[in-house]
Image 1: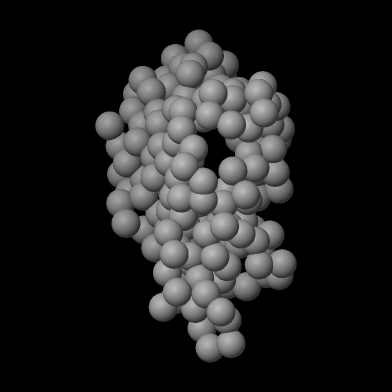
Image 2: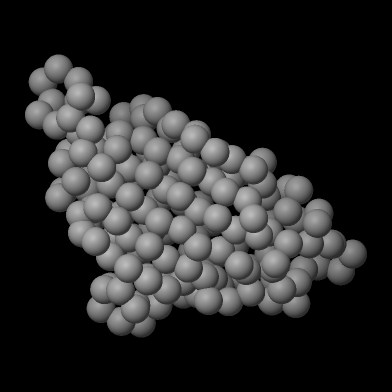
Length: 173
């Protein structure tokens, strides 16, 4: 299993940050490769989200289930189809990270474990002569760039304006 653990600081308390992390239907605004999110449920634990992704010549719909919510601290999820993956969004108070003139801050963590080789190749609709191994080698280096884009846009939504954010990489494959 591979693991990605990233974090950044948002200049708001966890109670104000968590609703943004929890709102999966807004995620297409944060990334260039997530085209649409459909939800089955009310957003609580047990809700299922279909996340339609597109990159290069690949289109894929990941089905993710929220397994636990401990607002405003944690949201856990796992994929239900085609790839063995699970993870957590975590929000922790970090008032010492707030700059002068800002009341408080929170650290937002994205933690995911996955097995890239557990993917069902037939579910990915790979072009002829393209292997899953080739796709994994091409996608893994782009994960960090995509994470930075998502984090910057998420923080801009949370804080109401864009700023350069520092993405801390705690663990990457």
